[in-house]
Every structure is written in C-alpha cells, then in structure tokens.
Image 1 (cartoon, rainbow, N blue to C red):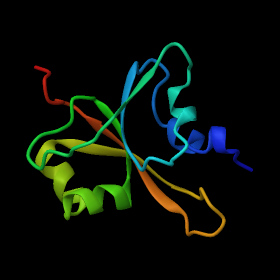
Image 2 (image 1 turned 135 degrees about the horizontal axis):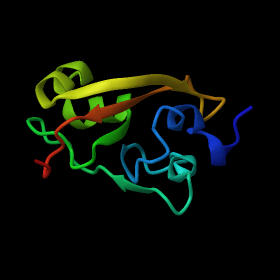
Image 3 (image 1 turned 135 degrees about the vertical axis):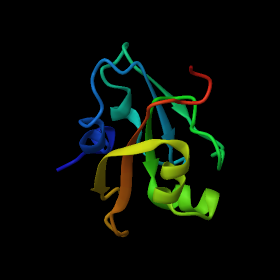
Image 4 (image 1 turned 90 degrees about the vertical axis):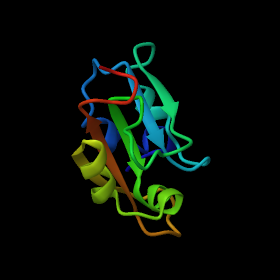
Length: 116
C-alpha cells in the first residue's frame, strides 16, 4: 500500500540517488514529496512550460503523461525523439481510488538545455 507521502516512490526508484536535481511536470495536487528523497541531497524543479524544440534544463525529468499531452498537444515519443530524451521507466500510479491510474515517465536527457 502506498501512502500519499510515498506515492511516487515507484517512480523515484528509477532515478539514481546521486542525481541532485529532478525536473517535474505534474499537476498542482500531486504528492511529490517522495521525489525529494534522499532529503537534503536532492531538489525538485517544477517544469511549467515545455519547449517543443528543446529539452528542459534538467537532465532527469519525471513526467505525468496526461499533463504533458494537455500542455503540448503532441505525443511524448515524438517530443523525446526531437529533443533527445530517453525513457528510463514507465509506471502506473493510483493516486485516488475514484480514478484510473496515472501514467508517469522517468526521462533522461543527455544534452539538457543550458548544458554543453
């Protein structure tokens, strides 16, 4: 059983512990606390806009699929192909019993925006 504070633990397990910053594209009411672990060693930056031509600034990004599709109007695979992102993992997470599970992706960008 997952508690709200550990809701995204199944997603987090795909991100190495030494990754200091994660990008996150989610909804305002999603429980992202578990992505901050290990506490004190990681920060989460909220992705508020997706550039259709460029990768985000962060090398590792957690993406809630329906949020991405609503924000961009395109498919995730097409955007990843264009921006150089690679899917590391895909997980289904049930946040609310009254809804179907949400699909979450862990994506790694080899050449994030702002990096050489």
